[in-house]
Amino acid sequence: MKTRRVFAAALLPLQASKGPPGGRPISPWAPIGALLLLACSATVADETLDRQIDQAVGQYFTLHLTDKAADQGWQEPRLTHKVFALPEDAPTAPCEQPLHTGSSGHDWKGYGRLRLTLTCDAPRWSVEVTSQATVYIRAVAAAQIIERGQLITRAMLDYQEVPVTRQSAGLFNKVDEVVGLSAKRRTRSQQVLTRDMLVAPWLVRRGERVTVVANQGDIHASTAGEAQQDGRLGMVIRVRNIASGKIIEAKVIGSGKVSSTFGSAGK
Image 1 (cartoon, rainbow, N blue to C red):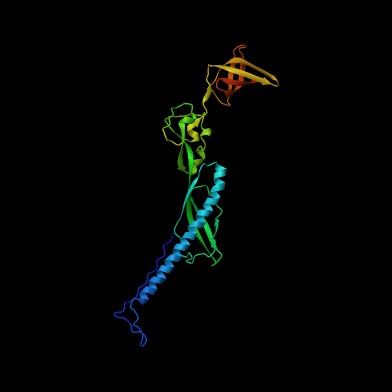
Image 2 (image 1 turned 120 degrees about the vertical axis):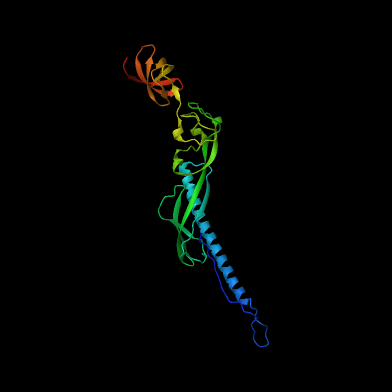
């Protein structure tokens, strides 16, 4: 914030000035004491105003953090903020009432700088300040080395506190979002995990036996099949019905298990 200093210069008298007749001499330090008192008062006023501005900016970001955390699913968010230097024409008198804070219309994303307008009702003034707030959140990280293709369990995961940035949309906020996925590449211990690093595991592999289930109304049936493709959860793959030899399309619903869509894809 802008530092305000009051400099005072005066010629020191060589001797004490004479006071009124019959009175005591005037101390040569009296003018200096008055100037120092004035400077101290100005400094106290500056510090009071600085605190008011800092508190108002902090309250603004804290209020908006609640909504942002709920919207983004952030876990245990922590906020830090700072106010950059005030403009040269900034007011010097503290506000006698709580400051009103408004933004320039830009949406705060949890990071970066934002220009705020602070308004005081008594005495009447307003000032624009540039501020920056950084939010730290808990993101899911690897608690150990995770090998490529390895199925991730809860024991392999932990949390790391990281600042919110442009890339934070790819982070995981809860371990439950990661359990059951697998790593695309080898992941080091304590590395924060992102969505482009993980993938749903292969639940069905080409050439392996699978169970083909078919549900139609109250009729439930199952038969053995052979996967003609690799498949992840939700994928539709080609499966050969071992009993009939026909190739059908079926959706992967679990490990080694598919649901028939009754669509023939040829023989």
